[in-house]
Image: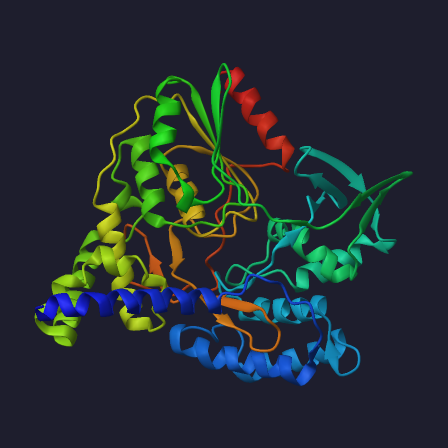
Length: 449
């Protein structure tokens, strides 16, 4: 048996061990026990120690010292006694994340949410029932004042850089209301009427396509789950119609998939418009090849880009992960996608849950002439983070994800830069609240607008 053959089983075993480790470290069970305040504070210190290694701008808004002091005040005010309940842990950690203020820092795993969102319009409060697609005006929740509750929700809603939009608070309210109320039953009152809801397990959503006489509606829950073949076959039979792309609640996903979808819909180079510049990725590829040759000598061809991309998210080292991410985007996005053909008009719906690659995709479509409806997205128009890693909290059984790369996709510059305070979320052409958006879009289509 030659040296290459002998190493293949070792390589396979290494991959299996890696998969096991990654799986074991990713706990999908929400915390169900109290944690000592001292242990929760230790968790936060440990997170900062690890996050400093991968995030160069962790203290853009608040220094480490101020973060730790503010968190200590939070644990004392939120948690009575010496320990914090599971809901209190989420509140303390969410406030901590909000102070960091960097996009793509979020709490996980959060496996339950209410089927409604609370939102504010013209000084009044409403709930939007996502399943029934209906809104109701409300004036209290669990017999508590909604102005007070809204401020509490705001204090634990993650920012997009320096900004907190009402749309972010609304989106996050479906998760955070039960924590704030410390109740599994959430009862909204609107005059004599009462609306009772309970948190439900979050189900994995699938691509949804519906055809109407004048338009095709597509709901994309995640950019990584985009089935281009299915979309092409569905839309091909309904050309010359308007297209409504619903990206509400889409947290992002594969930049390469977003690039290919943009390419399919517009015929323009998705790689150039959405993915980072090809020149940057070629440089990354050359650097990675050189790195591999130095480390493993003549065996480096075994470590192909396809093989590496299969577990690129296991890389915890900032420099190597950045290079590898570039190679993977290069491999994926270089395969061009044929344009789907004539589409009358493209309408896009976004909200406070639209982030990352989904926000970049919506933003580039907007620049290309699509009409964007909804609320401010939790993601920038031409900039996005890449490859967040989850850092495990030893005692609280929660993880905090933190980004390891950031790319500015402005056509004017190839510089890689981290966000500053002036960066804000993608804004729609027309602001509308939840169910109103579809009515406005359909009315526009029927009127030929």
